[in-house]
Image (cartoon, helix red, strand yellow):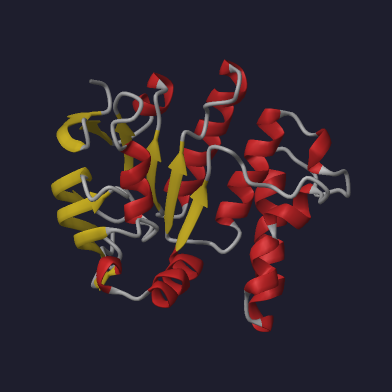
Amino acid sequence: MDDALALTVSDLRVLGDDGRAILTVPHLAVPQGAAIGIRGPSGAGKSTLLFALAGLASRASGRVAWGTTDIVAMGEGDRAAFRRERIGMIFQDFLLFEELGALANASLAASFAPRRRRGAIARQAGATLARLGLAGGARAVASFSGGERQRVAVARALSTDPAIILADEPTASLDRETADRLVDDLVALARETGKTLIAVSHDPAVHRRMDRLVDVVDGTLAAEAPADA
C-alpha cells in the first residue's frame, strides 16, 4: 500500500475558548488504508480529535500530517481546499438539506467543484446511493428514516472519492440491524478502494470491524488496542 497519505500526529494540543487544553496527543501514526476506531467516554475529546484531523480545530498546535501535508501549519483556505480534495466527513447530525432528495444531497459537492469534476461527483454519489440500497429519486429527505439519512450522508462523504473518511458516531441514531448493515457497507467501501477510515464511536460493533482502536480519556490519547479488545 502506498503511504502517500499516511497520518502522523505529534505534539498535538487543542485549546478551548478559555485557553485550557481540551485535547493532547503526543503521537499517533496511521498507515494509509487502515480502519481505526476512536473510543472513550462522552466528553473525553473524541470528536475534538476527529475535527483536528480534518483541520477543523481552530486553536490547534503541533503537527497533523497527511503524508507531507501538515494541516496545522496551513491557512484556513488551504485547509478547506485539502478537505475538499482529500477528506470525506460523516457527521453525527447528518447535516442534510431537508427539502432536497437523496441524490441532490449526496452530490452537493458538485456545486462547489470545478465544472470538469461535477459530472464525476454526481455519478459517484448516485453509484454509492445504489450500493447502499437507496434510489436517487426526488423524494425529499425530510421523509427519510434515520437509517436512510445516514446512508445519504455516507454517499455525500464519498461523492468526491476522497482518500480519507472521517466519521463521527456513524451509528448513533440507528437501530441495531441498520447500524450493522451501514458499518459493513462503509468498511467494505473503504477497504475495496484503499481509503483510510477513522471512526469515532461508542458502538462495540463498530469497534470490532476496525483494524485497531485508540482510546481517548480526559482529553488525552490514552492507549491503543487491537479491534477485538
